[in-house]
Image (cartoon, rainbow, N blue to C red; front, top):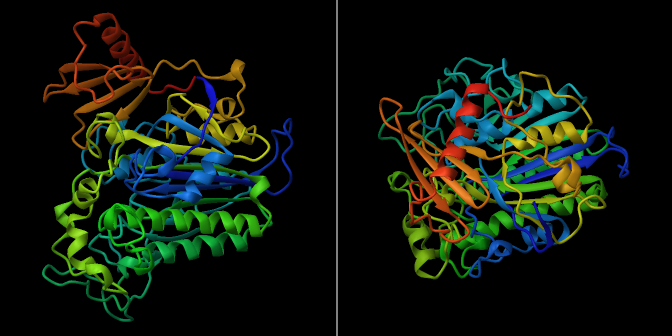
Length: 483
């Protein structure tokens, strides 16, 4: 890993704030922790990672005051398994599940349940996408509160999901008394729901809930897992942001995200928590370069129709590309693919007094690493059968060369079919594909010379291919990568 001065951007954002001042040699303090995990934000979607048509001053400020990572990877190239990996520190490819419907259960430790055991108050505010109980007419609806969180206000899958509802703690928000909640084919909104979500106000609502949680818990250790929906489709920025970027509605949506990040940061400033706070910002996976057609046959529930939003949301990403915006930067493909555009994401960490401002790191990390990082900050041992694929980033953040992990690679679930794993090892990138019989084929790329992953060198560089393939087999057989 090298550490260089630079500016940073991040699609997911973790904040760790301390109830008492944390000195450089005081590893036993209890920081508050906030993770801001953007939804489908690509590597090239923020200005400190190269966007020129979109301006993200608040995210850029995080980079300016902290450390920017250039080789950070989500645990998967899809939303739900990526979130599973972050929350558990366990690689989702190990589960051999297909699709985007991963679920947490109480038998696996999460960052939240770990921190609850250390005296933290924990909140999950925003997109959840990790499962609730099936029958929403049987209260309590179980979910985040059963896996370590004390408070939950959220969106089940994303702000375009068919529930059209928020959930707060154990129940729907705006349930009609005495009437069952039912999603009915052909109806715009479910039956039994008096207050359907308003698409262009979802992230404003979530941010307000996050601010309220911070204010309520400012005097004691807290963990806030904050997961806004932007810029996932629907691309429906609030009216005040429409027309503010040079990348159409999509750019406007990202600039709204940046505004909400700024609101969180200003709240920390106001409460004098900034100097006591570690912030990490990143994304759950890369962006989808094309518009998602599945969102276009619903009636948008909007507070404001201005800016021709009901038509423009259908082509928002295509329009941004025509305007010169490149959503995943130099990387190939995007969400749902094993190429870098699917899982290389912005990642920024700010910790005043501990992380050098304006620093940059090319350390290869996986989002599973956040769990062990939190434990390391608290100077707590992780149980053997928890966070098996999590390796602490704290030595990287503090530039402690002697403590940095010598890991060979990180392993990323490459699609939703359980048919491909990306093995990321700095310059070299191996893609392992499996057929119906689990037989393997390989693609090897030299990212230093070929960032677009166009030239397969698996045969020409057979030794590198064998080395990385063997690393994956060892990790699979061991059931863990944390020693």
